[in-house]
Amino acid sequence: MTRIKRGYIAQKRRTKIRLFTLSFRGAHSRLTRTISQRKIKALVSANRDRDRKKRGFCMYNMYKGQFLRNRKIVAQMGILKGNCLLMIANEIIT
Image (tube, rainbow, N blue to C red; front, side):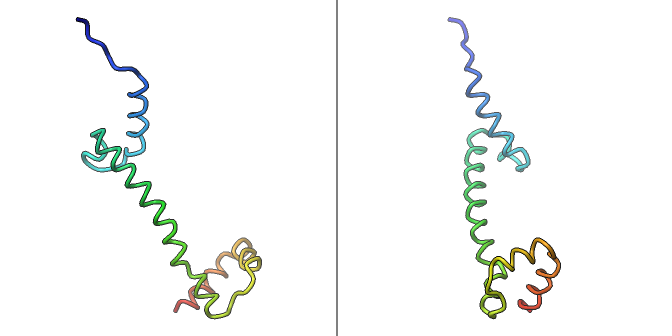
């Protein structure tokens, strides 16, 4: 019986997953099963940490100190003078 090679679609899928985990260390960037597990874990962590970043944002402290009331003004300050907004945030935090 002749040897049958697997199709290119499965290889293409694995290559795409490998490109995602290229910077991971050890077996997490080499073994297919471990690669897929690490990719899922990385995406879950990224999604979770995006929400956590928003929780820890200093804007809450600004509202708590009744400094900022209007979001439109805050957005304009951030666009026009980013350093000004950063200095105000540092003053409120400390």
